[in-house]
Image (cartoon, rainbow, N blue to C red):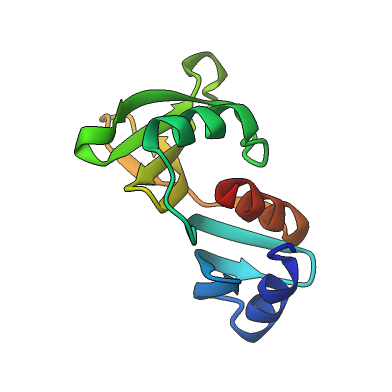
Length: 144
């Protein structure tokens, strides 16, 4: 089962703002800047899985399986004792001072955002464009 059907209904009903979609006992929150029949500009996504995952194993799985963000991500911080992990785009793949960042928060949640680094070093969220199909694949990959 895919996220796509509930995602399409939710985006049609609320083409802007925080959109929550469900798949069985899992859910995802998508920060939608705008959506139309084909594409979506998103500020980030967060998936809450139905079952616990080992944090270190999940970080490795995401590094290997996450293909719906344009840049490959690698673990930069994995600490199960602190309850999380951070993966980022590889530095050699950074373009225009932008990169993707994945947070594994606890044993059930994973979030993705795109970050832009300003000239002063400040980090800001940067929205990115995907098709509805790509967004569905991203949610599938995050849920694993």
